[in-house]
Amino acid sequence: MKFFKKITFTALAAVFAVSASFAGGASAAGKLSGKITVNGSTALLPLTLQAAKEFQRTNPKVRIAASGKGSVTGPQAVKKGIADIGACDWDASTDVPGFKAFSGQVANKVAVIPFATIVNKNVGVDNLTTDQLKGIFSGKITNWKQVGGADADIVVITRAFGSGTRVNYQAKALAGGDIVKKEKNYKEVGSSGDMKTAVGTTPNAIGYIDLVYVSGDVKAVKFNGVAATTDNVINGSYKIWAYGYYMTKGQPTGAVKAFIDYVQSKKFQQGSLKKLKFIPISAMK
Amino acid sequence: MAQQSYEPNPAVQSIRTKAVSGRRHLRHLLANTAARYYFLFSILALCFVLALVILFIGKTALLLFGQVSPVKFFLSFDWTPEEDRFGAAAFILNTLSLTALTLLISVPVSVGMAVLTAEIAPAWLKRLIRPILDLLVGIPSIVYGYLGLTVLLPLLRRASGEGLGDGLLAAALVLALMVLPTIARISDDAITAVPRKYRDAAYALGSTRLQVIMRVVLPAAGRGILTAVILGMTRAIGETMAVVMVIGNTPQLAKTLFTPASVLTSNIVMQISNVEFDSTWNYALHMMAFLLLLISFLLILIVRFLGRKRREG
Image 1 (cartoon, rainbow over the protein chains, first blue to last red):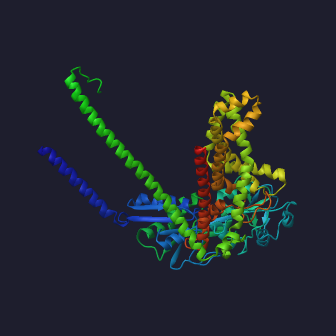
Image 2 (cartoon, one colour):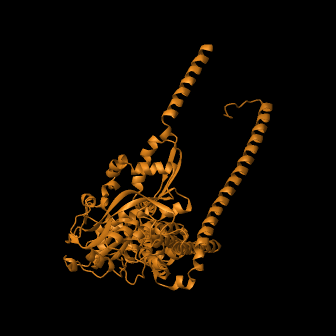
Image 3 (cartoon, rainbow over the protein chains, first blue to last red):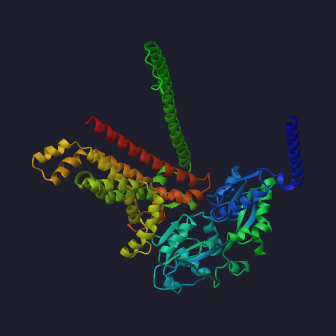
């Protein structure tokens, strides 16, 4: 019995010693605890989920819950106190067409998202200028003949008002121009996946999408003569891209700050983020 | 267990039976009471949730009329929410015409199928058709929508010469396929339930098979078939995912079968995630959801009413 007690005591002592030394050694990372809620853009969701998985490996006491709905729900959730981080495809601390600025919120850049103009593969046009795109989406240009293609009606496929992709595409590709709904040959879709299917299966269709989705039945057209590639985004010649943001109420602190720092760190930006086909923010400087 | 420990001694037996029956009585009482309270609780919980849904949707919806007049909302065709113009008339009319068109396509076909399975088909064909229809009811609507988008739309484009092919016709065809098994199976049950003596009497009077079906069986099963049609209708009105993929989602009145249009459900699902929480736009979408709720509530009331009449008659 005595022998048994001795062993137990020794074991307990050892456990205490080990855990104490661990707590002392890993004070910087291990002390972080709490719950981070991320809400907002579906485009940034894969990035958030991957980052959360990696971040929790080194900070097991931090619990991260992420969900995606629409870009604008991000800053709104932050405003209402539902979420700590609002993922948004535009800088929600400034005015964008349709949405007022969210005052008191700080925009933390986390990624670069390139967008592309896509057409059905039966369309013969390879290059479109800003003016031509403005004409097409505002309904002034209605036939591919007018922009150097075959004699066929242009079918415009667009995202619903308020979509982050649409906000950015309007700002960058259409130079702030309007997308006008038409009586015919005009369709709105609910997500990037629907956009790809719709443009891919509708002859003479034109639409726009995140560059990473471009493949198969749709082809990306050049913008003002520049091909839509990540290289051209990085070297500054292709202009249709935007930063993805993590909106926070004031400057981030504690675990939230540590998480955003991790997403912005060189390790994540050059590793997992690139693998997910986003572009690191540092590439744009 | 009780049978194994059976003993022939009458005294022991009587005591045991008494004890067992006492325990059984207690058990019954307990089980019955517990079950009764459990079911009562379930029903109350369900009612509570339903009340919450109606209350919260209705509350948010009614906030709309503080900012937009009901006349504008129900009668204006101009839905440009980004510029504060909230006219839902186009969606309401599109919803009604889509439902009507769906029923126009699906009712004759599905009632015909019901007659076939219930009256005409040999037993082996019945055994084949019924499980297939049951299976079709369970297919998720998004699958129908995707098939509509990738298979039906190109066909419609080729047939009509339109650039897009989206519109009421495409949506009605997809919906008709979706509600067809529902209507066919319930009508089938209604027709099967018509007493055999009606048919025998009609045949005895020298009727042909067609006459028996048209003049005797269908009128006798009439209310059941009507219930089936209304259930199909509620499904068609509330259906979202399949419709949203093939209707075009442009908020305008569908003047032709190929005009890209929008119905109540598709408009809600397209816009709700891009709208600010406390905005007129959000209230307007809630109002549209509330309208849908009222419409299906009304339809269910009609079904109940018809059911009661049938029992009385």
